[in-house]
Length: 147
Ligand SMILES: Nc1ncnc2c1ncn2[C@@H]1O[C@H](COP(=O)(O)OP(=O)(O)O)[C@@H](O)[C@H]1O
Ligand SMILES: [Mg+2]
Image 1 (cartoon, protein in one colour):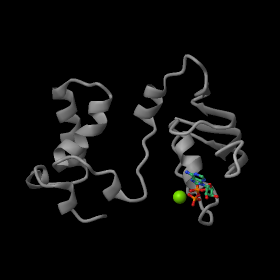
Image 2 (cartoon, rainbow, N blue to C red):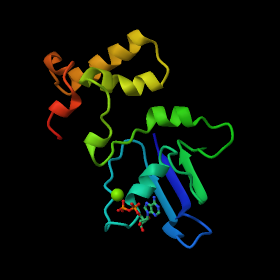
Image 3 (cartoon, helix red, strand yellow):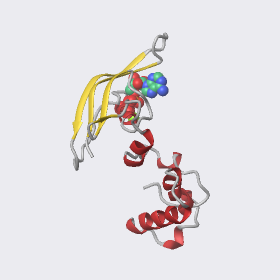
Image 4 (tube, protein in one colour):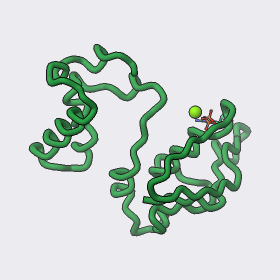
């Protein structure tokens, strides 16, 4: 997967007294398989930029390409994009909301509209991959450490 940003500008509260340009003409290319770190002062626009990558916010101007497909094209599927570009938020406890660990991990695949059997299979595979023992599956996510 590659991601390209071309001249992306984002303005909060455009046309009001509270107008703030969080991004101005940002161009960026992330090739397939590359890990990148984005560094900047608080308020420099890191979070705003990241939220563009899966279409959570829409650029005020500029273009974004996922594998050379313009994500703002009318027939581009944001659902497909979101099944490939995942965001992990800064405070994990703000995104945990299900009654137990297993159900919480099921949330992603559930939103892809998969059948129940496949949802549970994927959740189990993922939890096994990170080495989480089955004894934690029915615990509240808040009983785990933040990390
Ligand atoms: N919801 C919002 N409404 C208005 N301005 C915002 C909002 N979120 C962020 N900003 C402003 O956009 C700029 C970039 O913020 P942000 O993307 O959160 O930066 P970072 O993640 O690098 O700290 C800052 O000036 C911030 O005050
Ligand atoms: Mg931030």
